[in-house]
Amino acid sequence: MTLIAMTIKGLMLDPISNSPIVVLKDGEEKVFLPIWVGIFEANAIALQLENIATPRPMTHDLLKNLIGVFDAQVTKIVINDLRDSTFYARIHVSLGGKSLEIDARPSDAIALALRMEAPIFVAQAVLDQAQTIAPDETAEDRLKKWLESANPEDLGKYKM
Image (cartoon, rainbow, N blue to C red; front, side, top):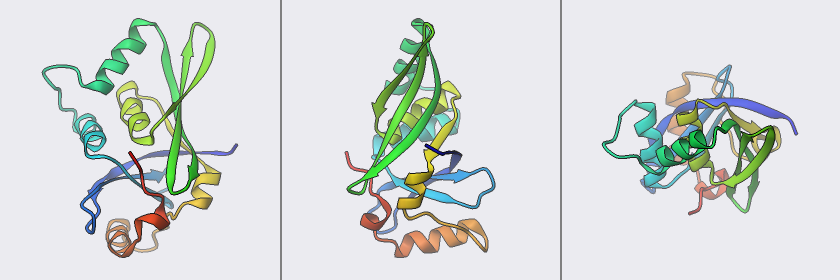
């Protein structure tokens, strides 16, 4: 499976449904992948992106703390599949010399990857299947225009 390293371009709201979208980008900013996420997951991602500390651990902070207590490491997360307009992800964990893969929603995997400083990857097959954005003018303007006219079912809507 060919994996493409991605980072977070940002979070935005779908102008039609007011649903949060996390936008991933490749290293050269040639491909952007929008993924619709839940409001709570978007909040967890935004808190980490903006380095905002909460008075008590949020769910993804708790996961980070548990992983640390067990002396494990998140080595990467991979958005590995797109079926029936739903993205799928795997969290890759190293624990005591073992490599484990844990099924996860992409939004949760991304929120955890940010906290663990783990790389984010998307399978090339997912990028081939999903509606991605290849900018040829200013990326942000094109992305906004494209999302305003996009149909979420064509993009791979995130389902709770």
